Length: 113
Image 1 (spheres, rainbow, N blue to C red):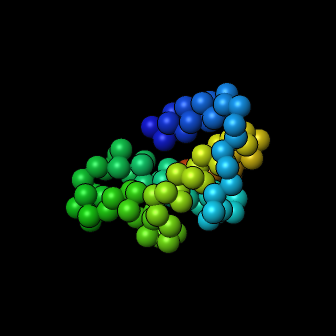
Image 2 (cartoon, rainbow, N blue to C red):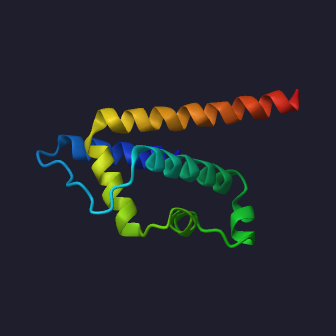
């Protein structure tokens, strides 16, 4: 939930800005950005519910994402800012993340029953 609040704040600030974010040199496509945000949501949920599990396995959310997608922090933040500046595109990405999270929840409930 922290990520959504933080991202909402970034979106709000950028959308109120007169200068939209410049296109990053290393622009990640919509699908990759969706995958990154989905992975972050999953990792943050795991960290919030089983804090010790990530630390036991020496998993740091940011480092994991950067290694998995072969990007650095600057690339991530430039892309985050760029996508957040286009509220329609960003909303579409987040709708996809939420849909995927809902599908996982439904699958988990189905397995329990």
